[in-house]
Length: 167
Length: 167
DNA sequence: TTTAATATTCAATAAATTCTGAAAGGAATG
DNA sequence: CATTCCTTTCAGAATTTATTGAATATTAAA
Image 1 (cartoon, each protein chain N blue to C red):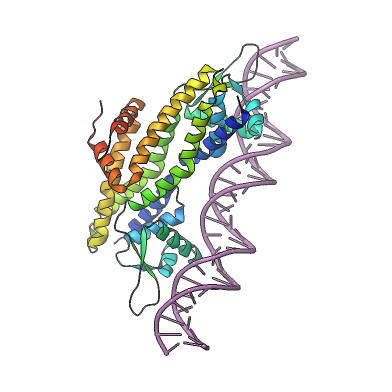
Image 2 (spheres, each protein chain N blue to C red):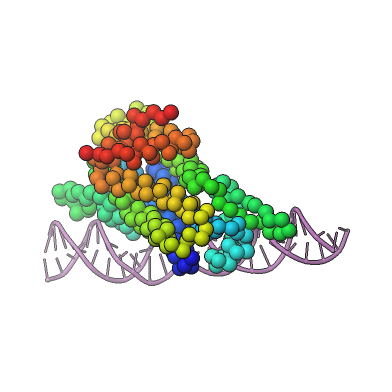
């Protein structure tokens, strides 16, 4: 297995992590565990990725909290080893749920609140814009709520979308 | 119009900005222009948001580059004024296209490259995982490509999704 | 042209985020 | 129960990202 290819994948996975808001190191650790056929331990993670053991420990902990990796043990070995959870979907969902709650919902809430103030009426233009926006975000909200309810749901939506051939 | 409500909206809009990867200041400026019935000038943006004129200038420039605000002029007034582009969709698309290109595509590309290496065969488990992931990301890729082709496309997809009742 | 008003740039600074590594904690072994 | 091996924590260092504001450019009017 060509180490350069592996490394390249790890790096681009790290870069993609930014897209869903997890930091580079976490995403790189995730990629490494994903690529490891055998359970991997903290020491090796730190060594392979050139990061400190402390940082590796935090990354592994966080990934464990996201439910995307799992700790396993080897008899006669004191160290903790890690393997990836078989369902590659999990991370996407955990993170999406969290970010929606933290970043999307408050904005929609305050937009609605703003619209409910009747003193906005003076400026029809502004009100119309905000209404248009509220409509859009509400639709997105509905979809997200459905998708993020559970993983099976999302797979259905994805399946539906991929068969959809627009005009 | 209650200034606290406005301010609250501006702040939560700023926070949501993070969700699609634009920084807080840019998103706050965006919200302010959105809320302004009348064209607004650099000086007022800086004053209302408590940011420097330099920063305001950069934000306005960037938003103009994204195509989400437009410069307008008042006769007898030397200053540049800004108004929001009527289509609230625009920013989402411009940014989404850009981020996909920079963050998603390289990861998918290197994943595919990795899979094409036949020396991965030794470890069936790893290969299976990566294949599963490639399938998932390819579907996402297909959907994104369709959606990001043009705005009308996306609206169709959104409409389709919102009428979809799973189970 | 010159002047004056406004906008932009960018080097310096500040703020936020991420990473390190030494110290403390915990658990298996003799 | 002391030792050893491994993990976790967290204050400070390093890095990255965002912001400022003074210098520079631009433009309209006189």
